[in-house]
Image (cartoon, helix red, strand yellow):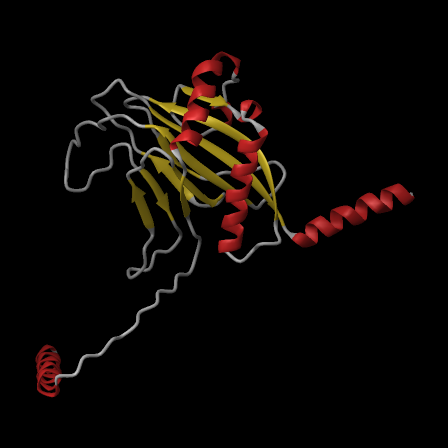
Length: 237
């Protein structure tokens, strides 16, 4: 089998060289499964959120009890974000729906919080949920990053410190079942509630790794119609 393949390959190359033909072959990729959308936000947008956090941290409620993270400083920031900023987040969630061919679904912003991660803290693999909807989008916006993530204790060629990792459900040996990203300030990732994700710890620095997460409930059009019908029926009753 191996020899036959080699012979075929050599014959093919020989013919190509002899006839001096060049083939331009177009390639198009098709993916199945969940999608992750990355936005690159301007520094001014990020700076505004950092200023709100730094100046009003004492007004923010701890959010730890609602989260999976092994992080000391996790605070709700949604009530302090200006309306125009919330509208920008909503627009990006709607862009995600357009990309996945669900443009008519309704988006409802729910909760936003900031994780101020310090060395040795981490966020274990988890997914997000909502009290109001089984469907939803979550997100991560990177606000501030340390200059170093410290020493990789083994396999330095495969760094993990401080990385955000997404894990999909595809276990096909020819498929891609995880994505590990080294974030930059202003990177904003949007993904479904159900997608597992986590953050690895880092070491060797007193600087923090600050990120904001925003959740968004999704409502299918038929559920919106049913809700309106119930409202109308109650008014008639």
